[in-house]
Length: 74
Image (cartoon, rainbow, N blue to C red; front, side, top):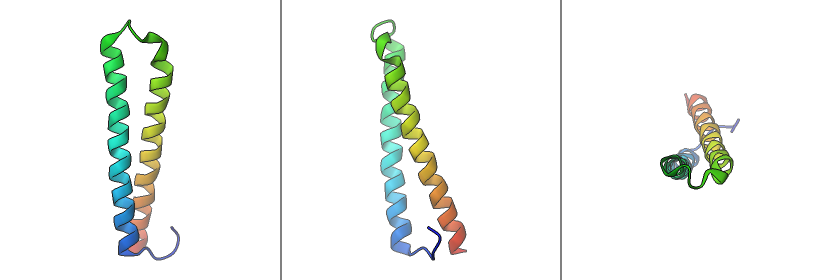
């Protein structure tokens, strides 16, 4: 977002981040539940952890994009 950021674009990005945050929390809870149920389901640890890691990576990138956009507005 190198050009001037509109209010609509900022609100859209904030809504997107809220959605990504909810998804990341859902993945985190799956990982937490898996850990609580061990040793049952141990075979899925890497898969669940990878999905959780990816969800938080995408969320962090979106938050960085928002911070950059907010900096450009000032």
